Length: 101
Image (cartoon, rainbow, N blue to C red; front, side, top):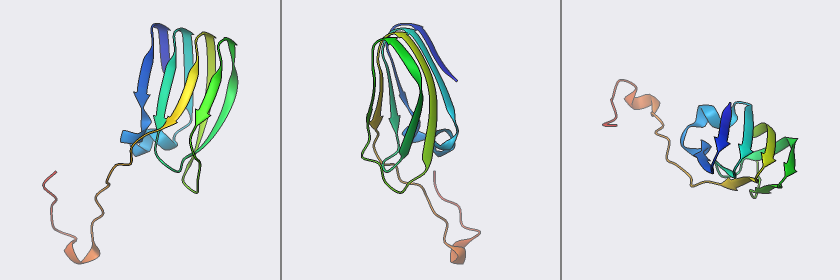
């Protein structure tokens, strides 16, 4: 759950792949909320903004689907596309090798 009472919040879900595929509940009472999702993510919104609006600025693609339930009293909810991150993939030939990070 992502909750903000007063003020604006920028939250980057693109950095943690486990968070970017889990259903998210977003509540913002007074302020704007911006969520960055991984590239090619499909976003499904369900919720209401009373005095504000909700926008999805993601190109969409064949990636994972992110379900977001939201409520905003005074403020906007904006979903944007974050930067792609490199995820290390271990090759089967070097199964016992360790990466330096």
